[in-house]
Image (tube, rainbow, N blue to C red; front, side):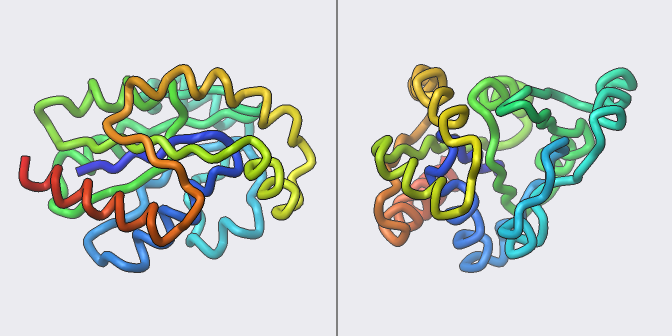
Length: 183
């Protein structure tokens, strides 16, 4: 099973993902490629990305190594074809934050190959701004400006959760995982 977690910048995607991985030995982080520089919090998550230069990323596109890719906040993100194969053939669950454009493509690609649970996290705009400031983000206006675009895709998700309380959010996702395991 692949658990996709999406939402606006500052909504807590990585915190939720880290908590689920820490609590469940059968959930592994699915790494994807990015051109964005590492954050200090990435190391706490054992680096959720394979960091590439823009040139390296473009070569992966040219060589057909990326299943999907998207530019978000002036950086590129993409999923390797080999990562999707791992999801389809491994017995464990994988989890990954994915942009709203990639979510549908990935879900379609894994149809009849693996179960996919897609979760969209929300939070009030003021809370997102507070969290972005707290983590030292300098592109707050850019990140918040994408929020309306991202919210227009919530209808594509299996579950929408307001992430105000981490424990409640994690428990709801755990409940949804159990539900999807039985399907």
